[in-house]
Image (tube, rainbow, N blue to C red; front, side):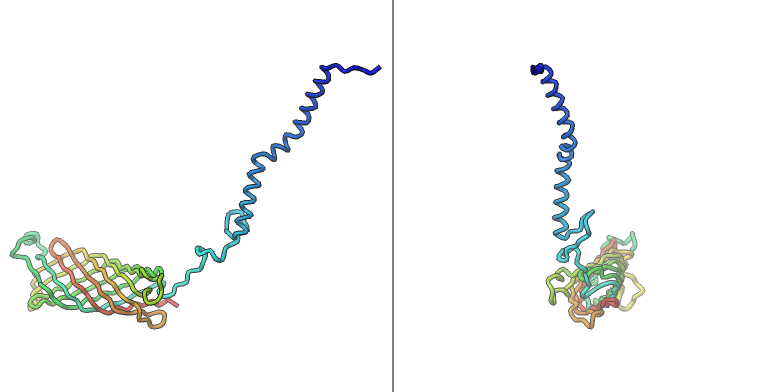
Length: 256
């Protein structure tokens, strides 16, 4: 006679079997869960990056030869140490007072040279950081003869040159703008008595700005051309400025 299994035993066996199957499959399922999916996604992304030749942390260090950020920049016109000299003719005027608090602002001590002509000169030394940017120090001098009065001035400061159209190539890459800022001094005297100070600027602020063309080149180390600048000085006892039209020469001794 067959043995009859009670329903309670069948239910107990079913529960035990289900628990065993669940405990056996759980670790495998956990490994294939979200973490496994994320690992697969990251691996696919890294593979795509390597195929594209992009350098990323943890890859083989491949580089895309067409990536413009990785190309070698070679100076074409200007690089490293540089110095230059500019000389020209000036046209301007100056007005002011002796550098004496008891005389500044009083009309009877006021002197205006009127328009006069003379010379302007500047020299600079610095570094050509790029083909289109130079920065350094400048030293300038200016003189005006206005008939019965003469003016002399000097300044020292910072010299900056930019070539804003360099990327267009051709002659435009040698068209530059110049800005100078610094301190200076200036005096005005009678033409026949340079010991008498009609205007004494003391220590004044000095500004200069100009445009130039450096298109006449001799080899890779010398560039020259015309320039037009305006130099201005201002302080408690002086105001004055002059246009300077002349010729400038720049040297790049280490440019190859």
